Amino acid sequence: MTSPSPSSDRLSAPHQHRLARIELARRTLLETRAPQTQPLLAPWVERSWRRCLELGLEPRQHVAFDAVAASTMHLAIEANQPLLRAAAPVIQSLTRAMAHTRYFAILTDANGMVIDVNGPVDRHNPYAASIARVGVDLSERAVGTTAIGTTLAELQPVWLHRGEHFYDDTSVYSCAGAPIWGPDGQCVGMLDLTGVNVIEQPALKHLVTQSARSIENALTLSRPHRLLLCLNWPGRVIGDDSDGLVGLDQDGQVTALNRPAADMLGIGPGMAPGHCSELFAVPIETLFDAARAQRGQFEVPLWSGLRLCVLAQLNRGGERGVPLHGAVPGVPLKDVETALIRKAVDDARGNVKEAARALGISRATVYRKLGARQR
Image (cartoon, rainbow, N blue to C red):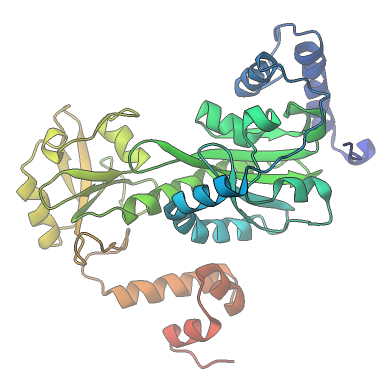
C-alpha cells in the first residue's frame, strides 16, 4: 500500500534534509547492500535492517499486519494482566501529554503482540487501523523494522521516522518505543507511541522511556513484599520515578526490584538478587527498624564500598498490600490522596472532567475528595 507524503514545500529545511539522508541510506543499504560509510542512520536502525535482510525479507514486499490466532491472543491477554493493570493509568497520562500530536500508544507483550491500544486512533485511516488492533503481531520478523520490533530486539529505547522503517509499506509511520522490564529483571513487553504521516517528534522517545519506567515501578510495587526500600544516590531526594525500588519479604529475601535498583546494586540481567544481607552492609533489623520508626531517608553502605540513600517503608497491609511509593512518612494516606487529586486537577488546568478521566474516577468523587461543591 502507498500513502501520500506531506507536501515537500511545507517541510522545514532540516526535515527535508533528514528525509533525504534516510532515502540515501535506503539506496545504500537496502538496494546495494553496501555497508554504511557515513552516519546516515542510528546504529539500531541499521542493525534491524540487516536482521530483516538475513531473514530474507524484501523492502517492497507487502505487509499484511496479521493477527495471531484467537486462542493465542486470549492466552497472552490473560498472562499479561499484571502488565495491563500497571500500564493503564500511565498510558492515560501519556496520551494527555501528546493529545494534539496525532500519535497514539500501543502496548505489546514480550513477543511483539499488541495487547492494548490507547489514544486518538483514526479508524478511517487504514494505516492506523491496521496496526492499532489487539492481537496483531508487530514483531520484527512479522513487519520488519519498527520501534516495536527494534525495541524488543535491542532492549533499549529507540526512535524511528518514516523511511527508517524497513518496508516501503511502513514508511508512513513515525514511532518511539521503550522496553518494559519486569520485577524479575526480564523484559515483559514494550510501550510504543506511533503516528501516521505526522511531523517528527523525537521528544517522544523521552516520554515513552519515562512512561515505561513508571509502568516498571507499578509492576514492582504490585509484587508481594513486607518492606519497600526506595533507593537513590547521596545528594538526591527520594520520591520520584528515578528511585530504585526493592521489595523484601519478612525474612529479608528480595521479592522484586526495578531496573534502577538493579543498576545501583550491580545486579545484571538474569542475576538472582538473593537476600538483602548480600547487598547491604547492615543487618536486616536496621532496615526494618528504620521503617517502623519512620526515620526518613538515611545512608546505607553496600558491600561494594558504595553508599546509597535509603527510605524504608513497611507494607502495613501485609505481604499482599501495596504502599504508596513516594508518600511522606507520617502523612495520612487520605491527605496524600487529596494532594494527588488536586495535582491532577491543576495539571488539567481546572478541568475536573479531564482530571477525573486521567485518574480513572468519577467527577463526583473528585468534588467529594476535594471538599468542593459540584458545579
